[in-house]
Structures are given as C-alpha cells and as structure tokens.
Image (cartoon, rainbow, N blue to C red; front, side, top):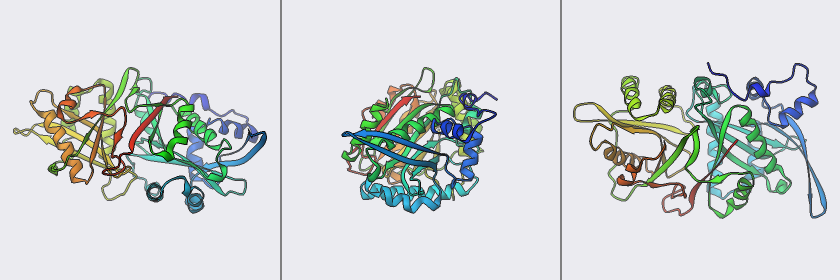
Length: 399
C-alpha cells in the first residue's frame, strides 16, 4: 500500500505537553488516529485558541474552542447562524445536518461524507461552523480512498461545505482562522486541491472576498485536479422544455461491472481507470433505502447487439435543480454513442425533475459542444432553482 503523504509530517511527538498538543492542533496537525478518536468523543473540544485583532484603534480578543459537531450542539448552533443566509438556504442547511447525523449512525460507506467542526465560546455556546466534503471508501476519517491510490499520481481533493460565523462574532478574525485551519488540517491528511462551491448572490460577497484573499481562483475547470497534468474540465447542459424523460432499463451492477471496466480501459488514462475501479466498488456498496447527503444514480446503454456503448454515474441532493455526472463514457468504436449518451443525460435529469446537468471529466472533449453542452468555467445558471439567474461558481486552490 502506498504511503499516505502528509501524515508522516503530523506524527505527534513521543513526549508532548498539553500546551504543545493544543498548539499542534491549532496548526491543523492531527494524525488520523487523533481525528478518529475525536469523532468518537465530539463533546470534548479539540483545542482552545485566542485571536487578538485591532480594529479602529481598539483591541478585540476572542477566546474560543473548536470541536466536531454533535447533535447536542445542533439547535444552539442553528440559532446562532440562522441570519447568515436567506430562509430557503437556511432550511437547506437544517435538512443537510439532519441527514448528516443519520448518515453517521450507519456503518455503510457513503458516496459523499462530510465532517463538520464548530467554534464555541468558553462556556461551550456554539457560534460558527465549517465543514468539508470527503470521498470515502471504508469509513474512518474520511480519506480512506487514499489507501487504494498512489497520492503522487492521484491527487486527493476536497470541497468546503457549510461555513458561517454568527453575526456577533463577525469581524473578529474567526472566519479567516477557521478557513485557514481547515485547509491546514486537510493538507496534513494528504489533500492537494481544496475547492469551494458558491454563487454570485449578494450575500456571498463577503465570503468571496475572503476566498480570494486566501488565494482561491474562480473557475470550474481546475488544473492538476486529478493529479499532475490531469485537469478537471466541466460542461453543462440545460434541459429544454419538451425533453423526453429517460427512465433507464439497466443500472450499474455487479453483473455488468466487468464489462464497464473493460470499456473504461478504452476511454480512460491508466490513472483515471484506477480511480474508476475504486469508485465503482464504492457505488456498488450503496444502499438505496439509506438517505445520504447525496443520492447515487447510474445507467447503462446498450447497442442493438446488446453491447454496452455508454454509461453514467450521477449524484443528486446538494442542489435542487442539478444532476452531476461524475463518471461517464461512450465506446468510441460505436457510431453515435456519445450523442445518445448526451441525450440520455438530459432525459435522466428531466426524469428527476432537474433542469441542469453538469458533467466533470479529465481533459477536454469538444464533442460535447456538438451535443448540446456548453463550457461551465464562467459559472452555471439555474443550479439553485429553475429560472434562478444566480450563477453557480467554483473557487479552488492548491494546498
């Protein structure tokens, strides 16, 4: 098994005082063992810290604690940050946290795992939240995929999740600290790319300024996202009125897995093929009756001779009007296969009541332009709802 770069550098000293341990945790240097232990005991805080910030000639001190989010803190946390969003967005957060706690109760692996951390005052009253999405295979600390991939060839990536500071504490440097801390912690666990999903709604202006200050760059296409020289390129298509709903007859299963792997060898690089193998294993472990933060979907298309010509692995759940195709491909030797796949993707989005589909792939493929898809790099409209002109944006940085 390949070594997990990053953890070697965050090994705790043999002899360490409580003050040294606190300072190490403040710097985001946690071993995987320590993270797992903390998630089993989230009522105990990870560390305490003080921020001193001068503003308009006045020195402002903020003392706080950081810990994993547990259900006992949920209601007080929601009350403290509810003014950070409009009502629909806030209600989406409430639902996400409900699903988050249910998801953590099961030992089944999930396509999308989330870790939430909160800041509390010295009386343990919560006032801020920050989270990250992680792709996981076996549970644990959220980055077990790295145990099956060489992290020199396959970059580990993660995305910022819900992030807010209660208004009473804004302007004191808490948001800046928490974002920096979550980046350091992710990096210590092997993450190379950190990204942020956001939008151009007026309420996000302050957050976007913070991301840009921290070195994040706007654009859905990301250089070296999958590994050295392996760029992520995104396309989107709008489901037009009159699009016929597509209900697939066949999903991805153990019965067709090997045929899909054989097709993958024709269309993917060796590095991407290895990632495909790992993620197929994860997909096939999903339980359809268990609600997750995202829900998996898949379909397989066959030609008139019964040969698999195309497939897609998709996710829904985070955004109301969006289907994301995270894996897709067509047999280049079967004429018209990509066109039929593009049509089926839009039809599947229609069957799910979604108006936008985004597909993410390694490298460019201009054939999608010929089949009703458009570049997504400058933002995607209507992701948050049909007719909503607010554009979905993505910011990212290398850690």
